[in-house]
Amino acid sequence: MNKIIISAIGSDRPGIVFELTEIIKIHRANIEESRMTRLGSDFVIIMLISIEDKSIKSLLADLQSIKELTITTKYTESNNIINGEHCLIELNGADNEGIINVLSNYLSEKSMNIKNLNTHISNAPITGTPLFNLKAITSIPDHLSITDIQSDLNQIASKLSVEILAYQFDNMEENHLFS
Image 1 (cartoon, one colour):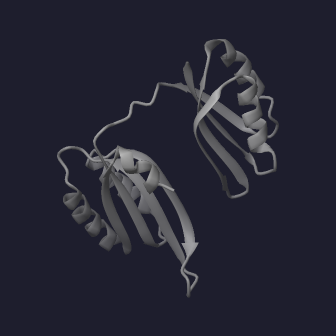
Image 2 (cartoon, rainbow, N blue to C red):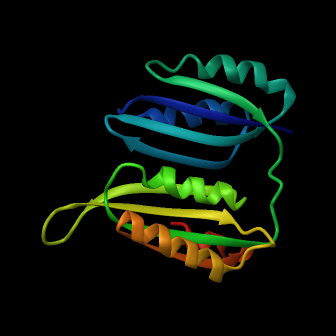
């Protein structure tokens, strides 16, 4: 079986998910993972499918027939699950430029690979002030402890005027943490 990542973006309208998944079904491909969301006035889809060799060419051609969607595809390898400890990072606070940049720089410097990252803006209950919310899952290298990570994140949080909490977990707990 081949693994293919499909990404699609286009103006939001009813039926996008049906059209895309109908083509995938017709070609006997299986959706293994997906993320779908509205960003601004557009709808964005990213999914990992598995498909047999004989169906790939016709699937790729049929995907391009969906009107008003920009679709890209990329072959990928099977998911090699990284065993070991992981970290859930939750950040909440005043929205300001550079939050993701500062946090991702720290994670990169510590060799903490980002597995999943979601952000959104919400409004403070009384004032309506925009609040930035981030949730990320990262790996924890053997040389780091959750205590050291939280200490570093406390310093970053102070500089950014946000709250950052880090929780350690293993692979078995992941599905319950990121929703």
